[in-house]
Length: 479
Image 1 (tube, rainbow, N blue to C red):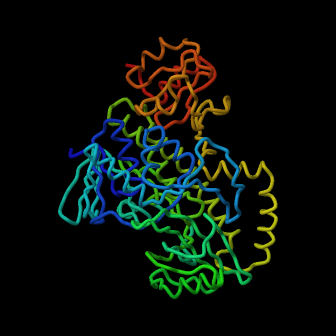
Image 2: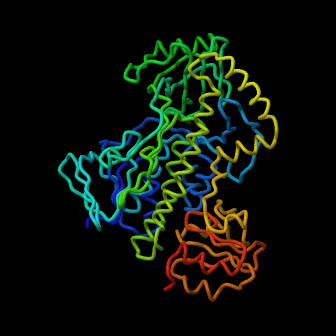
Image 3: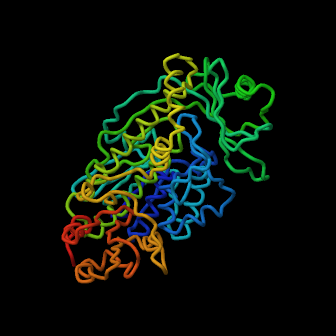
């Protein structure tokens, strides 16, 4: 066996997973077909839940130290949520995907994990105890498990012949990285009377310190085949149509046409092979959800693979990756499709859509609606289906980052182990049976007892009688 886990794809999903396996002490190889890391911005926003997960691994402060990454105001279908709507400890940030990839690659290299580039997958065979991957350069890698993080056009998914149902792309819009003049807002969504649309988001600065922005253009006659190149004249025309002479193009750095395709694989697990990120689900890049969903796929899967490699994974633990993450991906597809409809980014000016948007916009003035949308778009509304969830509101949800006096809960999770909060100091005997997999903490703290998995989700709270079964369910047999 060459490695315990082979990760195909070195984007945010693949490198997040590599870091989780590093924390778990699992040998890992990461390969990518590109000869060098892309310098394109791609995604641009990081949700509250992803920021929390980075904080739980001690990576948040170093990531934010890489540049100016302003706090986002949030929107649903281009309808802005109130800028003072602070629902969570860590409001989402503008951090371009290119920055995240560079940060993770440097971090992993410092820990001895170097991306093996120019590795284009051409063959995949799995048997009872291993997966054999072959590459166009003649290299063969054998591993106990393989994870596909190789994007929307996943070769792993193709070789598995995995079912990938959903809707194909029916139209396109333009996504570009630009420098502009005349922009006075951090983020904006603007329509003109004819249905032409432009969205702007910050992307930090170029090496000369000049502001970069993501520009998205849609509307009547904007939907062209994906293979048609996007020209500077087309960008200028789009800006002029929506903004008049106020906003001008200074530099076009990159542009492509994106589609409204919406697909999700039927199964996230195929034996010893797992699908994550865009290899498992694709949709329009609305609301900063694609990259975040992939990174959170990796956070869910990483500790479970670690448990399997180290031999203490309970039966069916690896299957919970699908049962927990597939519904999350499906929910993201639904909300993105709803946003796409309400935005009318094809510029149909359908009066039924316009009426629906008008009513929905009025509803977003209600605090309850604002809170629902903010929780959904931040990833903080995720609740995994777990035993005990019906009896306690915390079970299945992200752990609160409680202050235990000398330490915060998120800091305790940096070990990659589970954490048992035991404020009354009553669970020492049972916790000792799993002391190689769980850290007991919080004695004397003002909190209720709870068991938190390595990925930061509460898997037990409440009845003391249920603690030992929960430890066995998630952490296997005691030593």
